Image (cartoon, rainbow, N blue to C red; front, side, top):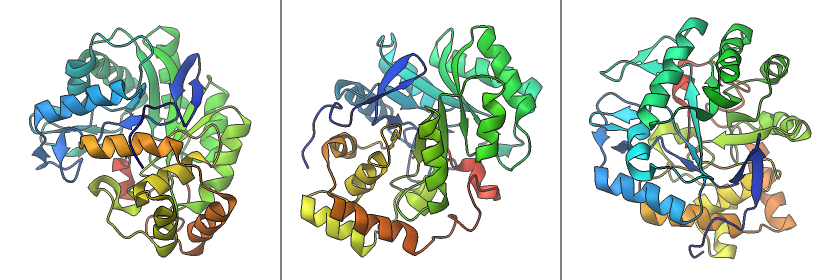
Length: 322
């Protein structure tokens, strides 16, 4: 498939902000190779900035980031600031709070309610903004989120945050949060063959007008290391039929799960970026979807359904974007 601007996949509203359904995940920008590790190899700064600017040129207006997306010398937020400020009026930047990393890149305990304001202010400083468009509360586990989400709701009332979302959660967390403040999106790990038990939660989000934003929809269980090239025969068959890549088929399948589903594939490669955006024009036939759905449900993969929605394993602290 050839490159095109980001219009074919349609749009969705995050609160009062309209975004294209293919966005951009910034996790891979600060480094080459595996993300979210202390000894990551910093990516060339100019190349990272060029990718961000190219994404906007292609019509991408939804960027997913976090203050804990960094490598030695590089920070996703500061790259975004350098590349795109002053920001286009239609650009929506979504970030995450909850996890944190020290200067060496080691993971810290998740933030307590009273620490969340500091994380919000760190994102504001790095991005050079006076408010954040969307802040997702990222969690691990099944415990109540009322205190932490309530703290973010107070920051929303104070004008530091425009809209709130959730990341790595289960259905009861969404219900709990919606009783406190509006929720515009849920970010969970999801893709072909990865956590198929999320299907019902995805539908529930749509019924409630909440965007469902899968992370690792291309990488799958490769997570922060990226796609492992282990695409099944079904994905490869559909890709050949459409003259597309396996990654494009995975993105197209994700988008066709519902009009409220948004994709945030991440890359530091301009060619991959163009291919990801072009996937918005790929229309899978009923036969294609039936074949891929069979693959989706046939063989749960490690890190998928065994843990259930919102996996509580230690590694899930890092599952934050593509």
